[in-house]
Length: 421
Image (cartoon, rainbow, N blue to C red; front, side, top):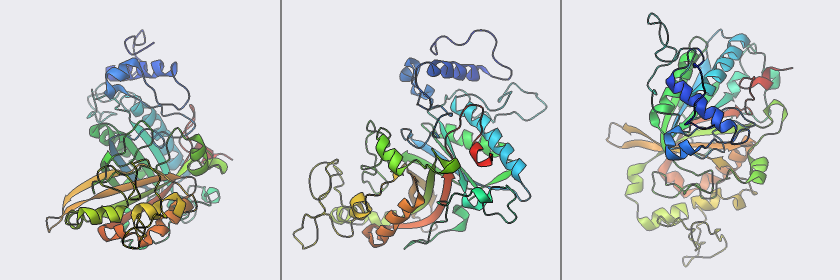
């Protein structure tokens, strides 16, 4: 079966025409690929807007998935007075909605237009006709969810040891209003309205049980997660993510990305950092200085020790000035696994622009996202960057850490293992 041969008979109750097309895609993909693998059909190849990724799987989608072009990230707090029943029901409702959204269906039983004219629609409707655009939804749990006074959710004893708040790093200027949170949702897709629609509807479903604490809208991926993707450029104009952990490197994923402890087995830990860039200062910096700060050429992306983009840096090569060809304070040198006991991270960040400040300067930067088996990996790399020459041009203004549970199997809900005996 493919998308040109939709299911026969009337659609299930409340599923609109768009939903039927989504179900057809689900059925076609289910016979073509394995558990938890991105689906691709002949129709998808002809129309990229129809591309989908399974919501159910061993791991949550949106980690090793090929990085999409747009992001909407939301952090939420449980409402005062909410308890275990409210949390579990919310995760259950999010599971059902996420499965519909990622399949290109409308949310709820009656969607945007098939319900009673005397009641608000189940779905807000702004994504009608757009297609799923490879939407992925990834859910995480913050440390504050486990630390509430009186343990209203009954999960304090199951807090993962690794879910320890990040320490304060050099040059951190963190703002509470864009940091932390009980829960998070990462929505990624190749259409901006699709990610906004997903977060809008999931936030609406949470009403009365949780409310949005902060959000971040991102565009233009700044890393790659597959060998088939080209290395993108960040707002400083340099290629970013050349040495990222890739989706086809199973050994590296097991060693550096997937957790293996208790109910978190198959999950990961997500670090989210809002890194503001002082764009105007950077734009007045000489090209040679920019390259020395980064440690790579701006054009090719090659290390300053020579070669092409994929050439391994030679950190021992001297320069004519008495330093190294890869300067001691260059970003690439300090962040490289060779300088961090081999530690690696899986990054999938995005650019962001929040307009201009009162001085007319661009408020923009990098929304850094990394997934790792243990947040200690990020702590080690970030600590190494305290002497990074790039610190003159960036400010870390937001920070959060979440436990990302393993993937959801059919019949289960998000983080179900956390609530089982």
